[in-house]
Length: 194
Ligand SMILES: C[S@@+](CC[C@H](N)C(=O)[O-])C[C@H]1O[C@@H](n2cnc3c(N)ncnc32)[C@H](O)[C@@H]1O
Image 1 (cartoon, rainbow, N blue to C red):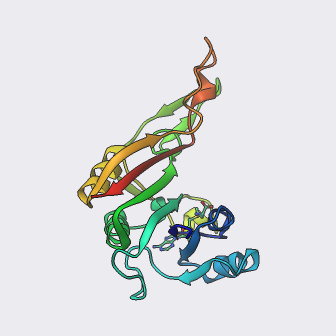
Image 2: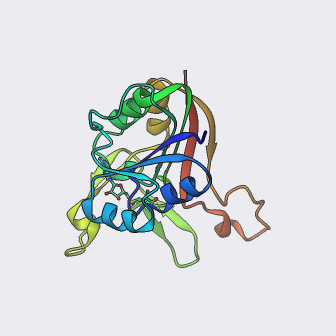
């Protein structure tokens, strides 16, 4: 039987759909009714649930999933620890959580791209920010910036054993003077429930 997978913050459902096509039995959770309607149009093989990843609906029972994934959601949530705790709760012992965020060092409003292609990081501490753009997503919703160490420490405190971290694109050795090309956009981690 396929693995039972929960995709937290599934958005328009592409990852959940891919995981379903790979043989998983997938449940996609998102706040947004609109995005879930789009997701539904991709496939009805995934169970789409409108809900809050910080406090999952009662139908999400303890120790009921093999894998929890979350792609690019954590920057939207006020309480990332609650999401780690909920993920741990719904995973079977030995179950795996894989999460990915925009890279807090290189992809934030506190990291300015300079003219020569390099970047200048001028702040790193945890903070909530809103963009100045009128009517843009980030001017309305804002976003939570957290250092990598905070994410990793809280992931482990929630009961996960950290297995691996990843920064896609950064693995390739840079050539001299090509330092700009290997700045990763994303950071992620894989851990398993003790
Ligand atoms: C940047 S999108 C990422 C969507 C998708 N996972 C992807 O990688 O393309 C973040 C998603 O998280 C959802 N989201 C934000 N906070 C949430 C919460 N507390 N519970 C469930 N979903 C949430 C948003 O509605 C949005 O669909």
